[in-house]
Image 1 (cartoon, rainbow, N blue to C red):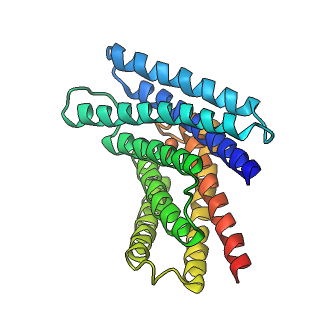
Image 2: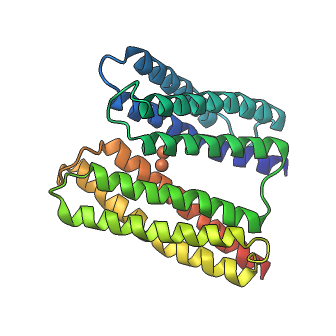
Image 3: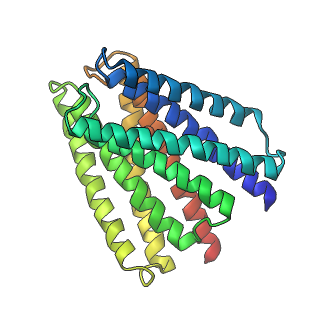
Length: 263
Ligand SMILES: [Fe+2]
Ligand SMILES: [Fe+2]
């Protein structure tokens, strides 16, 4: 049990600290060149999460659980700070107190990812991870919205002349909006909706769409890296959203395996 706590903590920190580090860079790239205070803050967060990422890779499954507990707390504080930075920034953008290229929905989106990470660290340290039926509903409600947002960002950052790709991104956006509403309906029908057959079908259906979206993101990433399509999507951002889809897919695979064991 203690080993599982360490492994799970390391997995989450390794994945999400890199994500937080990259968010800092994306925000920085989107600021106006003379917003030096915001640029400096973004740089500071980049360094903080790069440091956390490096430390997490230096730790192993044999790490003392108490050490892991304390490290989780340190990371929790850093994530709380970047979350507050993102929410504050959202206010500045919406009130037109700063400009640049960061969409409000993007800033909201990355603040939700920070909040998710922070919540996971808290669950790990307090031993309050969701039981399987709740995890299935909660993770899907969270990630389906993330996936729907990604499709919308890709849609808006592709060059408008890339008509076929823009159309595909729009279709994914619609598809995931529908899946998200289904998930929200299942959520509101809790706990009656949490039967094994319903959850199995729910996970199965979502997996099919997430796999398609993941493949689309992978293709887009490769095309962007090879400079074969016109867009204002940095290659790192294309890879970032691809990794988040792969992460969601791994979670869905683990749910499928867990549900099979329940049967
Ligand atoms: Fe992200
Ligand atoms: Fe994301």
